[in-house]
Image (cartoon, rainbow, N blue to C red; front, side, top):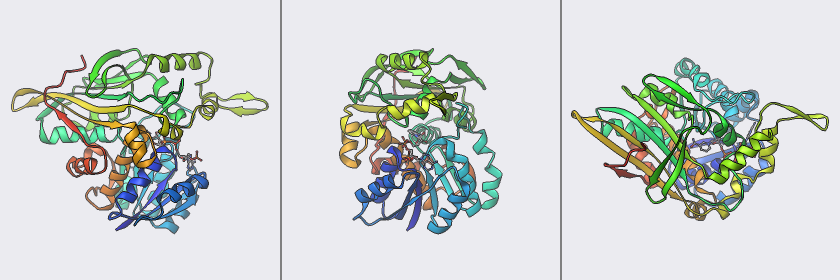
Length: 399
Ligand code: NDP
């Protein structure tokens, strides 16, 4: 039916590419383009032989001109950005110039400031609208499926949602003393930042990891969960009418937190450049280079993830609560596509988001967050492509 250009060839891109090939009715062709072409070629080798035609290319996604000439040559229906958040704007610029639809999984972050906000990408709204192309922002799991879950709860179960608690739990064990499940640099920037939550119309900041709760997660058991700032809260606060409070919690083991504290204390998580043997380096980038590559965790990781949203609100004047979540097994994911569950739970919705835009099921020129679209076709595809969801109409609340 159509063609997608995937930018990036890391953990998430690998799953998304596998899933595009499983959905060859929609993705008759894909091109995987990244900084290191060898990785794209290795991925192509795994994918060749199916119905989807796979090609590869080398691109520096920081360079808009290079991206424009690649898009002009490949002529995709959609660009699926699975590189790093630093490249969001250059890729959006290239999509504008070539009038190509755009999908990503993480909001823009300037490389020299650990601050992720939608304002930079929302500034493209009018330009995308005028060009008649759609930008779908945040089509991973969180952000991504959490926004789809919110739109689904709003559409089917509530007159008014009052609170949303997003709980992201990873009970996987990779056997390393310390490793991150996705890009280490992005992951450590996220967890070492101040926490925040939305309440009564404004965001309230907290010191990093200052709020800890314990929640008993289905199929995983009781876990320590910590309040973090997370990007989907910013768009959900605007798009879920009447919302009073949104919080985001993630599990961390004491071991992970101890390692992180030591690394912070010795300055290894800093993004301030330092001089080392005559050249400038950024300590966090150096740390990322010595940590295990997240894509190497697949064969070693055992256990499950559970990510979902707990809603409270009103329906027909009655108090109502609703919990919808997905449980994913690291070993099952590895058996299917050669990746652990964190890449899997992001790569599957990335493929589905691209498919929604390519098939025209989601066609709204402009720049939109995922909860602004009809959730029903996306929810159907989640089950079909490996992320079935479970509903609970009387969940325990986080507090
Ligand atoms: P990886 O580090 O495994 O992969 C990133 C890929 O991008 C690599 O192939 C890398 O190339 C490539 N890349 C980096 N810079 C450039 C550049 N300038 N030009 C071209 N290619 C480049 O990351 P992940 O796969 O773990 O994560 C991918 C994205 O998914 C990130 O933005 C992350 O924030 C997001 N994510 C979203 C989640 C969600 O639920 N919404 C959850 C997890 C991740 P090279 O191989 O040369 O390094």
